[in-house]
Amino acid sequence: MRRAKVKGCVVFNRSRATWNFLWREGKKRKSVKLGTLADLPTKVEALEKAEAFKRDYRLQQERAVVTVRKMVEWYRAEKMPRRWDTRRM
Image (spheres, rainbow, N blue to C red):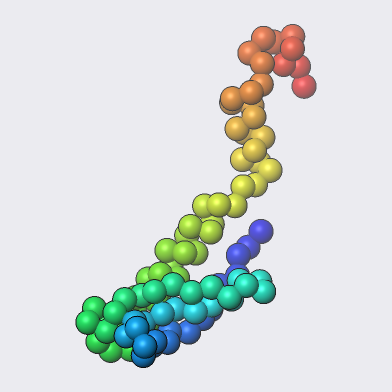
């Protein structure tokens, strides 16, 4: 199963003086704080940090996907009996 690309926007919260990255996952709205105005003085720097976050998030999502093949390999290695007569396929 292929994961969708993370799309979103970078916004500045004036009341807290922070840069945030906002996106949707299904019907849920999600956000992450990128940094403060002192850390990221321009929107360009905030966009660069958002791109790094999206790349890391996508890799994390890909690792979470478990295929049937991986489950079968794990079962054969960990749970399948060692004796030949009970292991017959």
